[in-house]
Length: 220
Image (cartoon, rainbow, N blue to C red; front, side, top):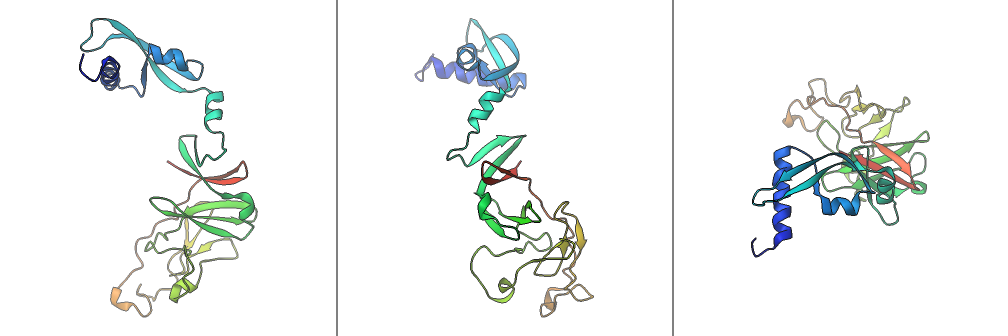
């Protein structure tokens, strides 16, 4: 034993055993007795942990049982939930997004757009794949291009306000590319930048869902 106590020593040895076995999560029998009604077990092993003389039973957790996962995901003030291998983030109330409306939502790594068209809700990265310029403003700026907004074609295509690239909202595929550029790929008034017509890439879509009165966006 060390000064930090037997429990910590056992936990450290269980962690080492978990790495050796290549399993996702091993727990001791003591912990298993506390949670066995909430989890599904895929296997168990009897091992002698390093530095100990006695064998103990370790259980490999497969997943939460359905009822336990449901309770975990009960909303209340909950802002995220785990479902289908994704982390779902609560954004705005369903009632706040009318048909034709859009909202820009800030996350730690990016800004996402949610919009409703024809009764459907879509979510995508607010950075246009071309030059990573925003489709929609996040604030109230209204100068230059910031005074314009991205639009939608008659076929429902999202048309970027900057260089008029068009994207299919269902698939993210490119429908048209940089139609506002000159024939040589330069931008009017910014020819010094040269040909900027490259970097073809599809729209980055995110899965979204409406549940419990809110719109949720899922990230891997």
